Image (tube, rainbow, N blue to C red):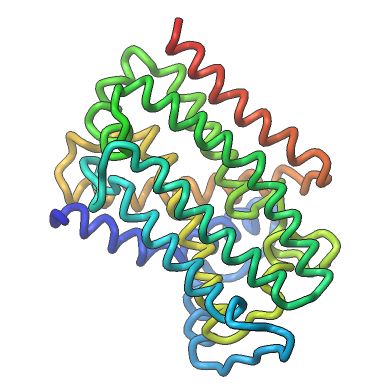
Length: 303
C-alpha cells in the first residue's frame, strides 16, 4: 500500500462517522432547526462501546457474528477503491465484482441477523432491505459497465483513476449520468430519504433501522459505524467519478476526497430537506430510474 493510498483510507475511516452528522446538520439548518452536533455519532459510538450487550434467548451465533461481518465486509470493499485517485490497495481485473460482492455479503449478514431474532418486525425490515437491494444492485453494475466502456479498464483502479480523467473530455455526458445514478444509489444503499428515514421510530415505516432493533452495546456500535462507512464508500464513488484526482499530489488528493465527502453528505441533507419519504411501492420506480440513467450513459458510449 502506497503512503497516499494509506492516508486516503485512514482519512475515510476517520471522517466516516462525521458524514451522517453533516447530512443531519444540513437538513436541520435548511428546515429552521438547531439539530444535533455534527460529531454526535462519535459520542454515540464511544458511549455504546462502553455498554454491555443483551442477547435474546431466541438468537443464535448468526445474530452475534452479524455486526462483525457487516463491518468486515465494508472494510474489504474499501480496499478495492482507489481513494487516492491512483490505485487501490487491492486491485485486479474484475475487482468491481468483488467490491459488489463484499457489499452484498454485509447486507446478507445483517438480514440474517434480523431474521434470527424471530421478530416479525425485523423480518419485515429484512424483506424490505432485500427488495431494495434487488433494484439497487443492477443499477450499480450498469454504472460500472458505463465506466468500463468509458475508460477501457476492468478494475476499479483504472475505472476511477487516471483513465477516468482522460475519458471526461469525450464521455462527459455519460459520466455525469453515472455520477447522478450513483448518488441515487447512495440514498438507497445507505437508507436515506426518500427511500428510508434514519430518524423515524415507527416500525411499520422503517427499513434499515427496524432490522437492528435487537442489537445493543458494541454490536450496535459496529452496525452504526458500518452504516456511516457505507455512506463514505458510496460518497467516495461519487467523488471519484466527478473529481478525478490522479494528477494531484497525494496530500492534495486526500484533502479533495475529504472535502468531496463533506459536499456529498451536505447534498444528502439538501435532498432530505426538500423531499418526503416515498411510499414503498414508489421506491422501485426511483431505482429503475437510476438504472435508466446509467443505461442511457452506456448507450451514449456505444454510439
